Length: 503
Image 1: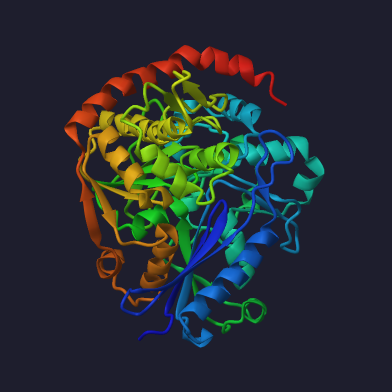
Image 2: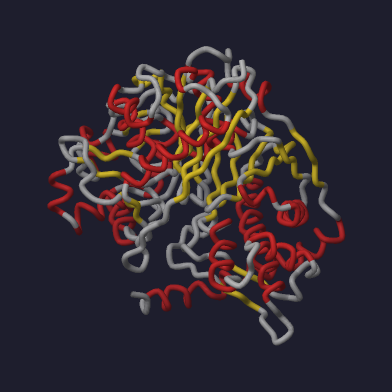
């Protein structure tokens, strides 16, 4: 069957992607619609949810048109999306204000409030995470404190992809992978935590019922069908947050495997059979798609976003953008001539959990040029992933394979830097748009087209290339990483002091 069969929708930070799969699991088409992040004040990151809907209209239409498929051949739809954001809805289900995104830096004071009301060890045991400004709960408390009229009018707080599903089906719902990244969810019960909600004085009715990730949550409504130009009644499967969906899209489901993704942010992901937490709270433990699986997550705030920032600020003259930058950087030796970059443009989560951390170029001389600085950015992001991997290793996780995904994995240079910096073979797959592909596979399992997730990924995802680390490069990076690690400790007090001057 060549016509579209399964649709996966990924609501990303800067774009929405649609992947259409055939019945055999072959990617038929991929379409993307971009949008911007609103930053009306320092530290703010917001988007109008209507922008997401319009992006879905355009991307889905293009995906269907590019493979010539009639709209009535869609058998199921599922969703993935950016995590931690909040969409405040009124009693009619309409957004009261722009969505506050994961990258928003408001909520530092609210993190301290959470840890005054809930002992950090208790919070970590229940949620798998420490209080961090990127999570949903601090944003909700910020909204209550700073926009009380909006909060009073709010009847539901939805995560971004859950809002999109509401528009598709009319059903208020969430699922464990996304909900477990709010600081309001019990990892083991896989439901909202009454204890946490009570301590923070938040009504349970604010939060949508939780369905299993593979469960059907309604169907395409007549109104959505008319707006999107597809048939009404198509089953909609709950889906997953983008991190868990990416893991499915890249075939990472069982212990011993891990996934590093270079997207706007960066993620290091390892599946677990039982919840396991880092006592220091440097990484997160969250729910995976299957009901008997969890995962460890190391979160890097600015990965691909760091390269995008550098391109936008210092390479506007390059017609080919990223390709030209990467070509320049490829001619620079390992270590960028002694130039290091700390990629803390949005603060940092793993391992520092410090909203005040700031990006730094260290070691600049008159000899350094744009090419060296680009190479330093690529290496700095890889060092940030090594920080996360170092924490994973303290937990004695078995690690036999590391797959690399996300937009950054399409760069041979960046992929080889990752292999050398991490000192591990890197497996690349033929997966396109991992999170959207993962969502499409969830759609297939949800309606029973695939018997389980293992069969779905076996039919779809193949390893195409292994990049082995070069020992002489790894030895060089080991020396540089020791300096990289020391820089944060040397600068931490200065980061806190500088943060007072921002505004």
